[in-house]
Image (cartoon, rainbow over all chains, first blue to last red; front, side, top):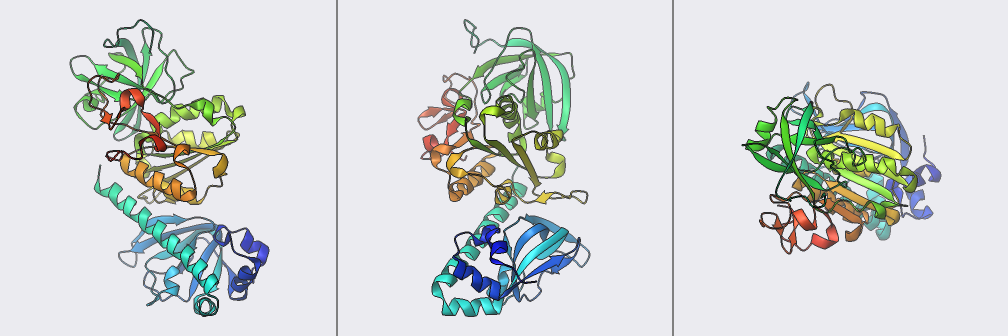
Length: 151
Length: 274
C-alpha cells in the first residue's frame, strides 16, 4: 500500500520536510503491516529497507541463541529503525518484533541513497535525522548499561 | 519549619504502617505528635533513637497534615535499621527544610515530570499537589523508569493518573522479565512518545544522578531552556540548615538553597552530577 502525503505529515520523523521532499519518500516507500509476534527482521539479517514506525508497538533486542531473545528497547511512533540498511555492510544489529498490530513505512534503502546522490539537501537532512536517531539510541544504551553496572 | 521550634530537636512521630514497595524500598506512614506541615519538594531528617538520622523528601500530599509518608530505600546503616522497624514504634522528624517546588510557576503550563527509581517518592508528593490544582494547569505528563518491573514503586499510581483528567503517566524498565509487556528502555526513551508544547512547558527531573544527567541533556536537546528545568538534588544533607557544610555544592547549600534548583542556577557547578 502506498503512503500519502497526509500519512507522512502525521509521522514525527517527517517534521520539517517540504512537500516536494515528502514526495521523494512516497515514490520509494510502501506501508507494511505486521501481526503480534511477527518478526520484522532478525539480528544479522541483511537489510534492504529502512523503516519508520507509523503506529503500533515494536520491541527491539538481541539474541544469545535461537530461543533466547533479550528485549533491550521499545520503539515509539515516528521512530526510525533498520538504519543499517543505508550503511555498509547493511547487516542488522538487532532483531525487531511486533508486540501488537503494527504499521510501518518501509523505504527502499538502495533507491533512497540514489536520491541522496542527486539531491544533496534532501540527503543531508535525512542523514542528519538518521544520525540523531543512532546518537539517541547509543546514548540510551550507555545509560542502560550504566544503570546495570552501578547501584 | 514550625515557628519557635528548636531546629536541632526532632518531633516524635508514631510509625503506624509500613508498606513494601519493592525488595529494597518501603514507605513509612508516620503520625507526628505535633502539628507538622511541609511544601512539596522540601525534605525532613528522619531519625531512629540511638541509631541515627537521614534526609528524605516526603512522598505524601502536603495537603494531608495528620500523617506523613516517607519512602525509604535500604542503602546504608540507618536505612537498613529503619527497614527492620514495625508499626507502633516512634521515630523522630526534624524539618521541613529547604526550598521546594515553586508550584505557582506551573500555573497555565504543561508540566513534564521525568523520574527514575526512588526519585518517584518526591515526585508523588508533587503529583498530589498538582492534582489538587489541576484546574490551573494545562496538562501533566509523567515519564518514569525503573531497573526492573519489581523495582517500580507505587504501581497503582500509574493507572490512577491515566484515569485523571489532564494527566498522562508512562513507565518503562531497563530490563524486562518474561511477564512484562510494557515499554523497555531507559526513562528518557519515553520522551520519544509524548506530545508537549515545549514553549509553554516546565520540566521536573528527579532520580539517580545518572538519570538526572541524561534526562537534562535530552530535555535541552528537545528545546527546553535551562530555566525551564527543575532538578531535585540530593547531596549528603545532614544538619538541614546550612551549618555543617556536608551538602555544599559550589556557592550553594543544598539543604538551604535547594534541594530544588533550576538547571540554570547550578549548571556551571562541576559537582552537579556526582
